[in-house]
Image (cartoon, rainbow over all chains, first blue to last red; front, top):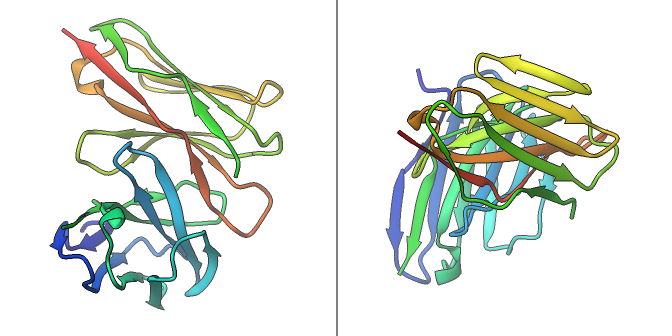
Amino acid sequence: DTAVSQTPKYLVTQMGNDKSIKCEQNLGHDTMYWYKQDSKKFLKIMFSYNNKELIINETVPNRFSPKSPDKAHLNLHINSLELGDSAVYFCASSPGLETEAFFGQGTRLTVV
Amino acid sequence: QKEVEQNSGPLSVPEGAIASLNCTYSDRGSQSFFWYRQYSGKSPELIMSIYSNGDKEDGRFTAQLNKASQYVSLLIRDSQPSDSATYLCAVADRGSTLGRLYFGRGTQLTVWP
């Protein structure tokens, strides 16, 4: 009964490939996020969705495209992967817009 | 970009001591503050939230908030080796519909037996 689950946990791929990360939450939250944690452990928001609507789109390359088919799911698709995309990507959800976020287990993406 | 600064670590304390973790933030109007614990290779886990000035206690953890000084801290009493982790301070974007959390860079805590 994992609250926020994302797959895969590890992803190793070559430069130039396209990959997707899936996220699902069973908490009934309206808001979902993608965060990126770099090698220095700094967590930074990438995207936020509220009720399937995109409300935050930070300055990330347009090779990154989130998709929310419904309130419980938020997927991240990445085109033309680059070495600098290597990081841990966390999905999160929250019950409201100024409340705490609950994180998935993370996807460690390594681009070689 | 709103700033969230944490005291530089790493912080090392003996078992049973009090560990003190500090955080300052740049947006004076911020209303919601959170402390997360992140073990190596794991995801951030919420341990405390605080919204009003003063202290909030939960077991061995006490969060302190001073909005006038734009300062929030976390005290861990009777520190245990299992408390060894990186502690992340987070501040919610205020009064908007954006809902993002701004994170500090974390303070790595080691509790030695």
